[in-house]
Length: 113
Image (cartoon, rainbow, N blue to C red):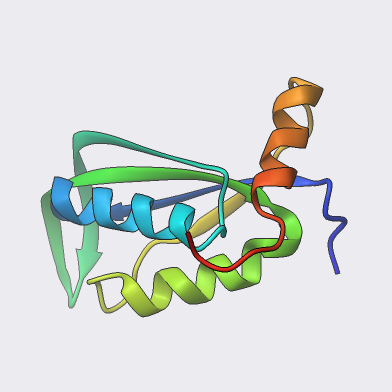
C-alpha cells in the first residue's frame, strides 16, 4: 500500500462544465481528495470507435493522498458519464510541505460531508 503521506495529482475530463463541477464536488464531499480544480473549455482530439474525434471538454485536476487513489478511481468510474473515462494519476515528488500535509489531512477519516 502506498505511504499515506505521498500526494498524487489525478486528471480527468468531462463534456460539460456542470459535469466537471459535479465530479469535483463529489470527490471533495466523499473526502477522496483535498482539492479539485475545474478548467476549460479545452479541445480534446482522440480516436474513438475508429474515427478521429474533436470534442470540447473540461478538465478536473484532483489532489489526493496516494493511499486514497484506488477509492478515488473507483468513485470516478461510478459517477463519471463516459463509458471509458480518462483517469490518470501522477505522483507528486515535491512541493510545499505544509500543502502536502494538508492534502493528506483532508483525505483522512470521516464520512462524506
